[in-house]
Length: 408
Image 1 (tube, one colour):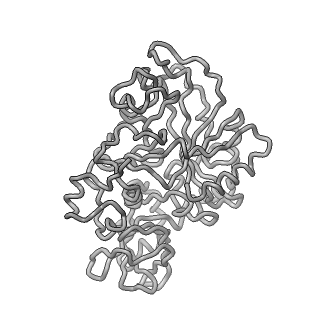
Image 2 (cartoon, rainbow, N blue to C red):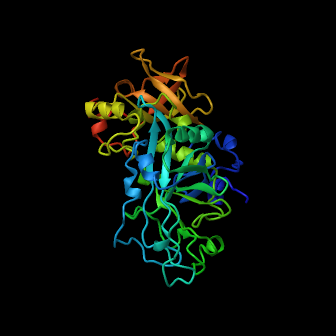
Image 3 (spheres, one colour):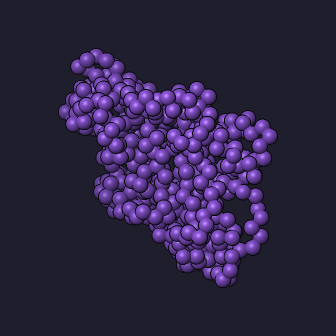
């Protein structure tokens, strides 16, 4: 399958620059996805795993930061969609969660998906529920591909006698993201369910016909559980292109990375420092990855203590890199660079992620607020750093630091 980096209208705006790789795109630093309309990216940085067995929920509930029990709750008579051969009667939205060290430091993040049960799906005639609904309970998860083997080893270490199997199914399934301007902001967790679903039998609509015929499971776009502005996420069979992905709107994953950077959202064990990061400093509570009511899990003590103390002095924030004339600088900063307040001479924080002239940084809010116009890269004082507050931040995150207006 040929992949295009950006739609034609966008390529025209980029004045003929070849956009099939991010390297050439990175030579220009304006956001290329603003105002373009919905784009879709295959997330090669994510792999898909499966948890299967009667102890799946109990096993994950004792490990992960979020409350996964709702993935097993009976839905009762409530229906979200009109049952058709292409759409389940009910859908359970995915859950974002993390696995921590016993000391409460970040290890891995996961997006957990519950595939619909067969008794919520019509058979291939479209007239009756499917039979044979006795297959084992199972969940899918998309995880950071760069730490896949290590992640599987860690989960298997905790498995002990639990009746749960953990498998890598990346060859069969892939993770996709649909994002950009123009996506609906509906309250429903599922986008356009009839068009956004595949795999519901032979009597499907034309949008999903080629990919759904003969499949025994349903696959849908779900609202990203972290922020509405991040768009829609889903896992789909690897041999298909998901519905609603127009041929000229499939784009490189690096564009989604830029979209996340502008929203101040880190993802995976590279951007969120494995074994070191404090989850609350990376805004995981604000991204719906942490439940403070669920009970015990690995690393809970530090999270609960920090949360109830109420003050988070450092947070991950979006950054821009400029020269002394205010022009954006590309490829001048690397992850790990220290940010200093040139007025006070104090260290403000560290750059964690860089793409072109944008990045993410873990900054002390006091220094960032006091000196948002005086931040620079240590050893590169000609590289100015502008930190901004994402629109998704609640105001109380800054109340303890006083100076709301000082944050760009």
